[in-house]
Image (cartoon, rainbow, N blue to C red):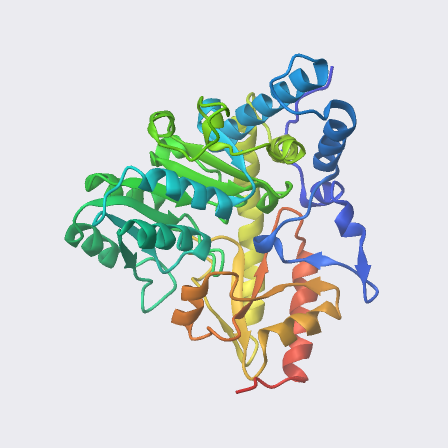
Length: 421
């Protein structure tokens, strides 16, 4: 019998699970700092998806064995994802991605709203949590209000948030992010949910950037809906939605008449990405396998606690190194603030894309652009070219951080591009 793990896995042990880390570029092992845009995938996730496609591939709800097995594997994925979010399995549904899920949910919810009702969004959000509500507001004659980002730092302006909720009549829903995908700022979700509920509104949480770094707890937060994406926490490209059972049961969801009308399947339009759903569950189990505890949730908690400590140290190392470089400006909260290990920065007189290209020469892969956090970039003054973004993941090592900093030091000493007007 396999003995339970007695200590959390080390970074060195974790890295052995990721074949992508064997890739080399410019004579160096690739260092993936692009996790905020999508993490690398461990072998056991790919193995689970391959096993499904080779051994169990079928459509759902028929009597033959592979269909029955598919039903069971999807239900297991709901249970697994419920443990990940601290929900019930009937409250978990799947979709193509968070963006598609949110457009679908917005349409369903708005059928219960009237012209003149209001939806509140924020400037800090990825526009996948802005555009769906903006479009449904336009279609249904709703009022769309926006909570500002603070002027002094990239965080939600809680005073303006309170003001908007108090002064806006008939607020039906407040949509906000648990963490900014652009600059890493973490929002006080429980407080924001409580504020939404205080005016009788529903609370929708975008946890896409939060879920890879902090353990989500929908029960503690009491949010009504929450969406995340498995590809941000080492799974395949599939989206996950948590919705309180009663809300999902009562919504008038756009659907085919003959499709299942039970919770949660009534939210899942058409044939789903079965292998992706299986892979999402495998990604959660991978995270749990790194921790200790009697239950999956306990193991996840210990994993996230350990990763938080490790990534906090990497963040401090990366922040200090970048901060010391002339011409480099970091856009975001200090390392000791409530934030994820994601750093956004710019280099004086250099385009973010050119900074990213120079780092490739050392096998360092970072992202550049606006990351669909368009309003954040506008407020930071970088709407046209965006910023450089580097994020730490469970497989990020100190050596990789040092290699990135060495590349940045060389780049600052020998700049080769100038920002074009």
